[in-house]
Length: 160
Image 1 (cartoon, rainbow, N blue to C red):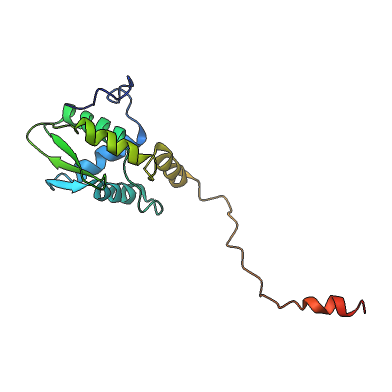
Image 2 (image 1 turned 135 degrees about the horizontal axis):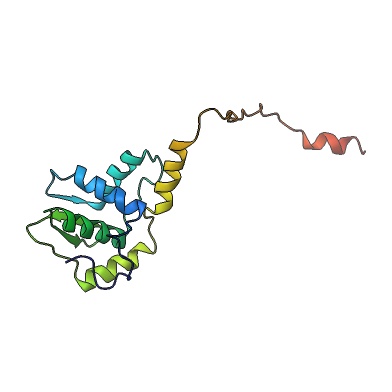
């Protein structure tokens, strides 16, 4: 069962992070599907938090495992995780929990070092943007001035 023994002593059930809460919310919204990839889950998270950037961002395995562990303990849902040859995570609703194999987990964690993943900062920055007061004046978009050709030789002709 989740969490995997290699996850730190931090207990996500007591204090889940912002991104773990968003993962849980997205999983519950996708509960009618029996299986989906992490990128479908990430797309749902982007929709929920109105994030326009990070289109190719994945989900950190540790956050996903913690969110799934919390969901499994608070509901009757169970999930199994699989990693394909491109190190993408497939989330599948099953009758009992099936964590990743040690080899698949190691491959996925190694690939996360070179990929973009969602973080708490993405969620908290976006929540901060939503809570900003609209009374403050924000400068408008700075318009470009028209481009003008510069004759470089004109300065040297005066010296002759």
